[in-house]
Image 1 (cartoon, helix red, strand yellow):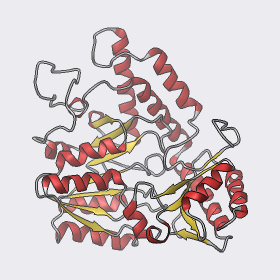
Image 2 (tube, one colour; image 1 turned 90 degrees about the horizontal axis):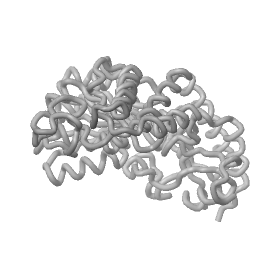
Image 3 (cartoon, helix red, strand yellow; image 1 turned 90 degrees about the vertical axis):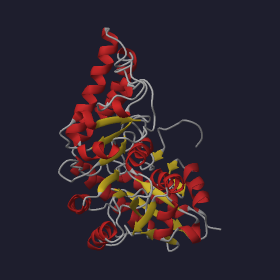
Image 4 (cartoon, helix red, strand yellow; image 1 turned 180 degrees about the horizontal axis):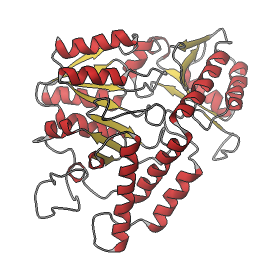
Length: 392
């Protein structure tokens, strides 16, 4: 199968980005391109005002969805990586100590390593693949004994279906005065997130994964504590904000303080449509279906004696595995020749692969990531190709 014939293609790479996009999202984004493409906040005319209203409507929807009471603290970004750069570079000062996990995506890992060089921050790591009680103890020890003032972690892993107990982690951080930064790329739209109640200080997400939005828009949701910690830091990006144009500095008010440059009303409308679609389906229903598909995939994969499944005890739509006798890349090419879309390699998370044991022997893994719009038939078809794959 070649080219763009998607009708017979089985897409199982939803952890990278959700596909296909729902019609409700496509239609709302197209409506934005047709009717809401003015420059928001950059004019008193109706076209500009309409674009501003569209973005504000998305902020309200996001604030409600993620359960935060202050919509002005919902910052529009380009993606999770952009949001994490803003968050970490805004609050980590010279010589501070930060605690992160051993399953971080490069969106966190590379930012921290950059700050280690430029600001001499000290990085400590906890094992996120231990059971919940051990994880909680490790985080508390990291704050108390290693004096970490910032904790950054993925709510959900991008290489296996590990979901961290974020509510309890937030409680520990709150009780011990640590700032909690959350990489929510893999959890937003898949599991509930209660920003205010869980004591999160910065939630970083992309729209294009579990929220079904187009690529190019994400969110950074911040707490009042974050805003206090951010004061006096150098803004990651400066420029036009639509207000206080006479000042040489970025505006002090949020969200404009962290939003330099023109925002996309069409993408905001697509994101709002995705948020509302997830809400209408129900996160519980989405999670249940992804667990069902993930369990079915593991059952099929385990029928090949050459198969190695990483953390098969974890339930969810992400399944990382390998087949002894073939590299992940060659196996992915074989699947693709039959119209099955998987991802092979390190998935931008090398330390995570070191932690699960796929790094040394295979240099990564094959990753199947089922989404809500996949079906058991998709997994069965994947299984037919898997069982037919020649090795060596």
